[in-house]
Image 1 (cartoon, helix red, strand yellow):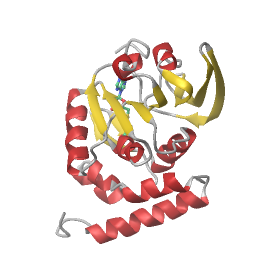
Image 2 (cartoon, protein in one colour; image 1 turned 90 degrees about the horizontal axis):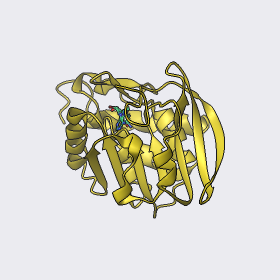
Image 3 (cartoon, protein in one colour; image 1 turned 180 degrees about the vertical axis):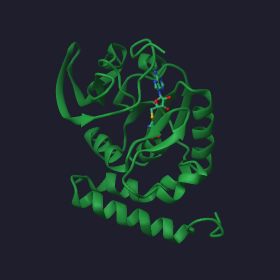
Image 4 (cartoon, protein in one colour; image 1 turned 45 degrees about the vertical axis):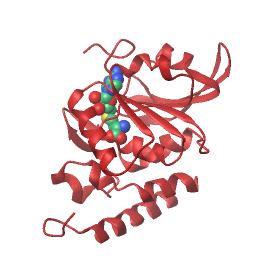
Length: 222
Ligand code: SAH
């Protein structure tokens, strides 16, 4: 990275630390989550033209009509997964790869599924460049989960669907958590499901949010 266009690496790092400090003052209490957000260079997962806005707490367009969630939303969803370091995590909706890079620092391994080939390829390349080795990006319909790699201790869905996809619930490990936005296209409830038994789940609503569509068999029609 050079300072010839936009701000230099040091300025990005300082902006990132300011952002993390402000998230700590808001609602984020988990120090590991804050440390992960402080370590992942979000600007390097964004299109060049948007890099200078990487450390404002904003959702930003990443191409193909998709968006990278605001850092505060990534923090809240990650915190809700209650990761301790040993988990196997599924992410539905790789997008830029930012959420995956954050998860990679907090869990043992991350399987991330993206339905759009270009985004999957770009995210894979960006994660490689960052030296992230414990994320596998797969192309496909993440609303079906990934039975081959199940069970997952935690699942995060980063696109909004009409309801929690049944296959994802079935792929949760005992006591596993699933966090994602579900409800109408215009606005969703940010929901956490916790597996309490073979066929029982506890459901909590963590807030209201608006995400791009989860498109697939257990999401909206394309
Ligand atoms: N987690 C991302 C944000 C992604 S935006 C990040 O950190 O940048 C939501 C993403 O979900 C988009 O890239 C969209 O293409 C993808 N998506 C939507 N439906 C999907 C599905 N059924 N399977 C996999 N990816 C899906």
